[in-house]
Image 1 (spheres, one colour):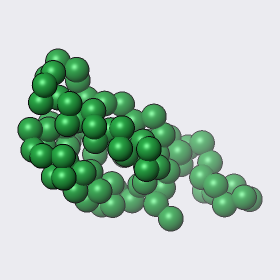
Image 2 (image 1 turned 30 degrees about the horizontal axis):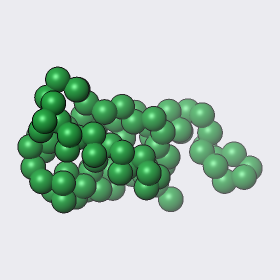
Image 3 (image 1 turned 90 degrees about the vertical axis):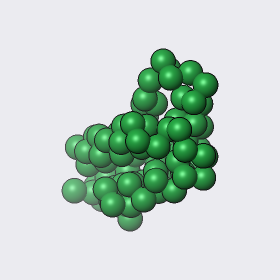
Length: 87
């Protein structure tokens, strides 16, 4: 439930971040060897299906971190710092 300012409450924020992390985990597992455009497309698609959003800087960072796995597979899946329910 959103608060009086229209912002998500802590539990909604946590659920959105968990959902976004699941998307990032899937894209990392299945798409990291693809080109950057494919990674970004799959992130957008997954986030949309999950009903969550990342701010543009966070999405860019995550996409870059996934793309960088081509050169360093040991780096691991990027962590989502914060997501929000899609408006």
